Length: 281
Ligand code: NAP
Image (spheres, rainbow, N blue to C red):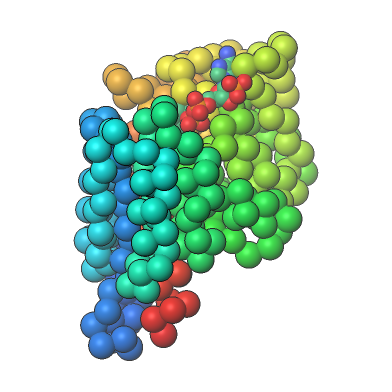
């Protein structure tokens, strides 16, 4: 049987239609006020600029607004903290996105943690991460939360399954592992010092590629009937997992592109709408 395509593009489209209705309702009930996502871009990295533009476009598609804050690469940590403070204090702003990565001289962790919990719609603060890990209310980190939403939509069994997450970054691997644990999967987290990675991946019922290296996880490491989630996206349209060689052996997979990426953006705007619903109604 052909594997199920975990179609993030299609699911994001369907969710956008529902979000547009929620935004219209919010506007009706608040004399026309729309949810606003503030996006902060520091420096002139073209890929980051593209991601921020895509996020702004997604806001507009559902009738929301975005407030684009663009800062030069020379911005200091103190200046960026002050910008975030101003957005925290601005009652019209419902969510704040600080585009990762910021230039190396900036203390990114301090800046992420400056974002007020109520506006942390990208799920990047330590406080939000800690609360999510403890099963308390918090906005999920957008990429892993988008993956969880995709897995749930396709009714992928997580409880009792062995999930192997390759990567442990603060915005992807680590929160992914904790979310899968919250969903009662048994989780192995792998990273650059992991020994015999291929043997660990071979044990996975669910494998998540979050390494940042093209086709680093080989097709023949993946066991039959596995669920394959690929967060990577590289030039040439390949991800972190060698999807091409898998054929019909696996149960389901996220395509690259059109799997994880659209769900990341959709989760960001969904959580901004949720934040606005808490304050505007
Ligand atoms: P990152 O911060 O560079 O983290 C990469 C992780 O991979 C690290 O934990 C690193 O381990 C691990 N790693 C590196 N080499 C390894 C090796 N040889 N064996 C095992 N693990 C290894 O990257 P990221 O931000 O998490 O992103 C990961 C991927 O997801 C990238 O392809 C990125 O483009 C993609 N991504 C996609 C979205 C989306 O919306 N679609 C969003 C974010 C990221 P150490 O911790 O030991 O260094």
